Length: 449
Ligand code: FA5
Ligand code: MG
Image 1 (cartoon, rainbow, N blue to C red):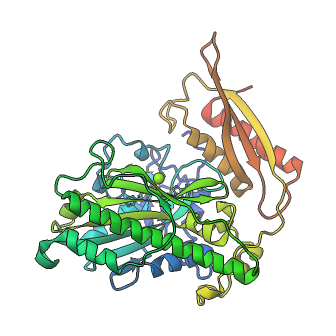
Image 2: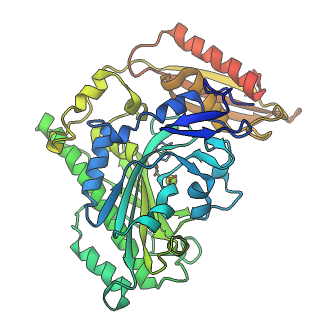
Image 3: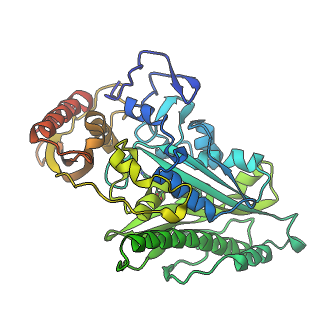
């Protein structure tokens, strides 16, 4: 196949993940060994790890018994759980082999915690739930994107048959009054719903959707405000003269097949807006299919690693995977006493080694390739990741053009090699880069320029 990313046991017809054994289909199986290894790590359950601590802090903003916690769901799910149950159309690009890690045609590594929404709505008796888990995506490489990361799903539901007078809007508004009010200014130019861009569902009244949206947004803003106040307290413990930049948040309209209306929340961080979560009013079909048609409510999905970056001031998402004691020992004891939270103290910053590669695309890719004949940038990302692992900091398209006579397309990428743990020699970087160049030719059939 096209993938360089053959796991060590690719010749086997099955793969073991977290105690389960799954039949692999060579036409679908595309999980590289570094990703397979990551399935054993469960950073959200590793005490004193920043991802674990961040999970604790977010959970504390959604307390039991209103919310019930599920942190042990298996990462191997069906295409039904990950896509169909959520209303993803059959041709949705997220289903492609270029975006998702498959075991076989019906089995994959979940790409989001929403894969467990339907099952949890069906099984859960409480008013709300939180699900934390490792998730997997073939994705770009940079400081805030990694092929394995962690999400927390949250949902809060109200039952038409259980609220006073069946008045959902009044019940949600009453709930909203019990939530703390923060005093941070939030940019939210969006209407509660929008007929074309972000529609109300037929089965909801405007008042219901509006109340649910407000409850959702306030709950999430409070969580981010809490994270920031803990980060600020930590900074002040280290340096009483510390003055931080004011927290900035903004809401952006979004689209998910399983919520409407939908939004994303962005936080200003290190000179840029960082998307931290997606959310919305749950599509009624999810409740109906889960056998609880009298319920309605909201759901969200947070990137835990992204929140952890904000909380600990961690500059690069790769650091979470470090087994270096200079990283891990910095957080010892925090899980048992969140008031001891401290920000990350970088060990010395090692120099970056940027290297460029440019190539002509093959007019037709080799048959049988996982990109089905089309060049896909995620194949470049994965080839680089497979060759150089966590030594890759960033991969970016820097130039692209079509030759006016031949019609051939040229692409140029800049790859930044940088270790978080030591200085790379130029020879090492060159040798990684040479292997990347060879792999691009071998696996994508491109012609180097
Ligand atoms: C989702 O995954 C939806 N399931 C979220 C959702 C849940 C919407 C419930 C509505 C209701 P999205 O693909 O935007 O949405 O990812 C959610 C968050 O995961 C992002 O905001 C970001 O914080 C984080 N994230 C996404 N890709 C990566 C990545 N490659 N590395 C690290 N974090 C990521
Ligand atoms: Mg998003």
